[in-house]
Image (cartoon, rainbow, N blue to C red; front, top):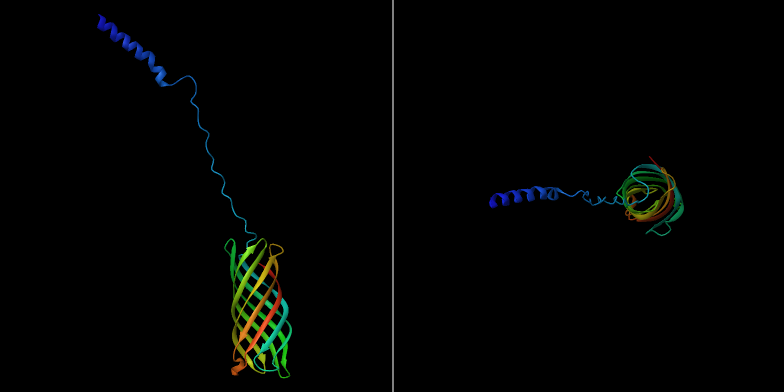
Length: 197
């Protein structure tokens, strides 16, 4: 009898205790969800990727290793190319053609210079500060044409989404012009205006 009463009491206590194991009448507290912060996107100014074309105008100072074969005058022409915007940096390829009529001697004129160029620069706000260099060819009346090289630097600034204005200084070297022993060096200082497509 005592054993039976003990079993009944144990069963009742287990039955009464079950709701407390199942939970309490108060709702469980939930931790607030943590929302990850939005990634910060760096703004490096306008996008320079694309084709451009325009014109340039400036001054050329020409020297040579021959006495009295030098001169300086206005120079100007056309420019075109393509740039790739890499975020903070820009790389590009281009071509320039400059018309000239620079008297180097009574019988010799520098008539034109054209260039195939590479450039690489860093963006500064709406501007691009860059280094450039590549292949050049000069046409000298009285001596002929000659291949050479050039290098220099420039700055270009976006005035609008499509129009940029800049300046460029280039140093040129041409050896043995027209199969002679004449070496010609030239420095050009030009402003450039381009339309970007």
